[in-house]
Image (tube, rainbow, N blue to C red; front, side, top):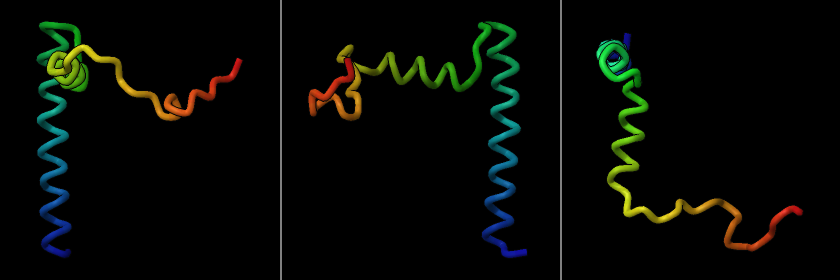
Length: 63
């Protein structure tokens, strides 16, 4: 097997294993997943402005 592919697969397995462990611990203590935590962290770092929506600048809205 290509060593680069092997490295990527090992890295992917390690990431998946860690994410499952984090999901379990966060689920037990806070009833959220690691993805939920990452989203909450992203939102907490924001400035409170509204997120842009694709196509909103054109002003075209279906009525």
